[in-house]
Length: 72
Image 1 (cartoon, rainbow, N blue to C red):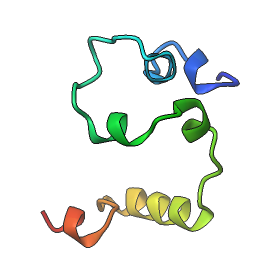
Image 2 (image 1 turned 180 degrees about the horizontal axis):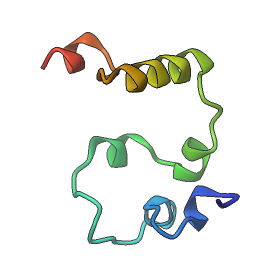
Image 3 (image 1 turned 45 degrees about the horizontal axis):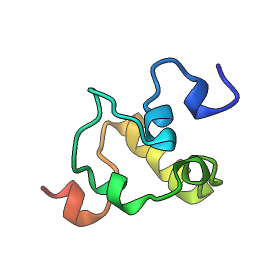
């Protein structure tokens, strides 16, 4: 693959990091407003418990998230 998310051809990371426009990115996404430093955000270590729960949900075909998300 690649060393950095922004180096992957189909990743939108470059647009987020460099704050350039990208016709694929939705305007007004809450993450765009919430995350100010995308490079740091993308390089954070993942929570091993959350990763395991996400993998388990994926294997069983269930959605993963807080109850307010999964029950809608």
